[in-house]
Length: 188
Image 1 (cartoon, rainbow, N blue to C red):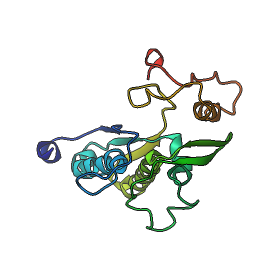
Image 2: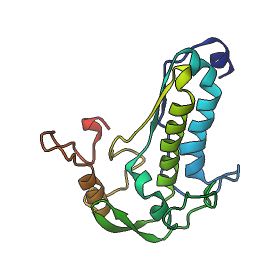
Image 3: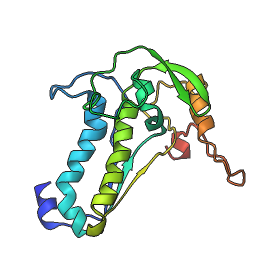
Image 4: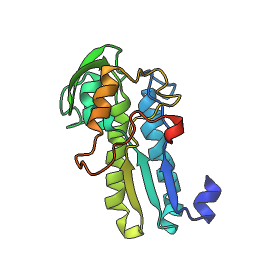
């Protein structure tokens, strides 16, 4: 990393590594999903900023629709990020929670995944504002629901998956529907 920071320019940075669970404390005393999905991206981006500035880079943080319901999914009160009470996030105990998706409520297992994804969105927004004069653009994107090793245990016919996929339908009827969930054959 030191060589890249000192000598190179970087044109693109895709922050895409992630885990979905479990919500446990790491040896660094952080919640695992927060550490891998957010802190890792934040630190890497910060360390590479000199090279990113030289390259007038585009930074893309992979987010998720899970950011919309991060507080509920963790079993925390609405507006849980209004202050620092839940940051850094504590371990999220495993329990059933009711999440109010755009398509209606569903009972799901608690998760800290949306928390990290919410923070990735906020990080991209802050970078876009702060680094604009340095020629950097930053974005957060949600790829939709992809059946990968990380989501392999999800049942595509479960109410949660169906609710999520229903919320991914474009309001513009002239656009073709995207497959949901995506499979490896469809580009996942």
